[in-house]
Length: 293
Image (cartoon, rainbow, N blue to C red):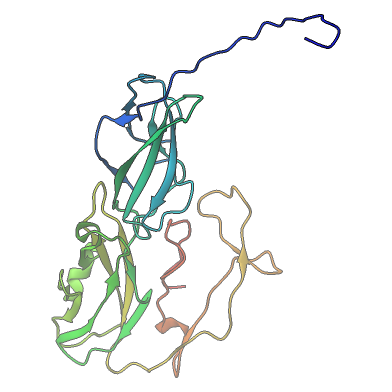
C-alpha cells in the first residue's frame, strides 16, 4: 500500500527446482583400448557410458585431459553418445601409451555434478618403416676366400617382430659368384679364391613384420685384387624428363637434346672397366641404367 490508501497486486510464479543430490556414475571403473598406429582419424576406440539416478542416460561427455605426452586434441568424444575416437594420426615410435580422462556431467540447473573415468590406450606398433642400410653402396677387394664385410641395417619400428631383420642375396644369380650372406649377422663371405672381373652384388634386408614384410637393398662392388684402387666421376650429372613420358624414354642431358650419359673411369684405366648401377634414390624403380654404358 501507499500513503493514499490504495493497493496493488502482482502474480509471482515460483519454480521450485529439485535438488541435485546424485552425481553420474560410469558403468565401468576404468576403460582400456588398443589402437593400431596406422588407424585413420575417426577410428572408434570405444564408447564410455555413465548413468545418473535423476537424469538417467541424459549426460554430456567431454575429454578432460590426456597424459603420456600426447598432444592436445589427439582424441575426441561425442558429447551425447560417449564414443571416443581418434582425431589425428598417431606414431607408435613417438607415443606408446595414453591415459585419457573423460567427464560425464548431468544437466541439472542447480549444482550440476560430474564423474570422471580413465581410459587407457595402448598404441600398437605396425610395420610402417622400411629397414635402412648405413650406406647404399659398399666396395670390397677380396684377396681370397673368406669374410668380406658385415652389413648393418636398422629398422625404426618399435616391436621385435617388425624390426627383426634377415639378410639375403637380392639376385638369384649371385650364388654363381660364390658369395654368401649370413641371414642373421649380415656377414658377407666369398667362397672362391679370386675374382677375374668386377662384380656387383645386391644384398637385401627384410623385416619380419605383418601384414607385409618391407625390404631395403644395398650394393657391394667386388673388385679384383689386381684392379686399380679408385673409381672416379669427373663431374656431377644433371638430366630431365617430361612428365608422362613412356617407359624406355631416356633422360636428356641439361641444355641438350641428347640422352644423359653418366661416365666414370677407373684410375689408370678406361671406361670399359666400369660397371654402372643405381644404388640410391630409386626406391620406386622408376629409372634404370645400362650397366655397361
